Length: 115
Image (cartoon, rainbow, N blue to C red):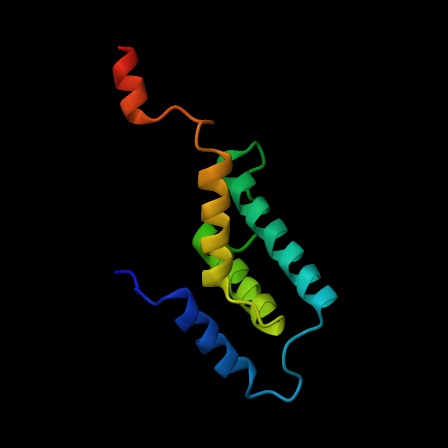
């Protein structure tokens, strides 16, 4: 069962968590390094599942879901530290993609018309 928590709710929840520590959010460069590290861990997991590199017997079990969760947490931390709304960023990106890529891909209804 999935939690239907909004991105804004997640940003507030992470901020409440981070705000209890004196250190607060990491610096932008540290945050980017953490994000890059998490992307690498996701890439490693995908490579184990779909690539030619099987896990060693000594390696701990992990999942793409866990790695995506780690990435989401770091992304939320990064956005919060910069005072950015991920909901607004997402809306702007969707608007850009819908405009820029509106004729780039074959729509299902177009595919049916060709047959």
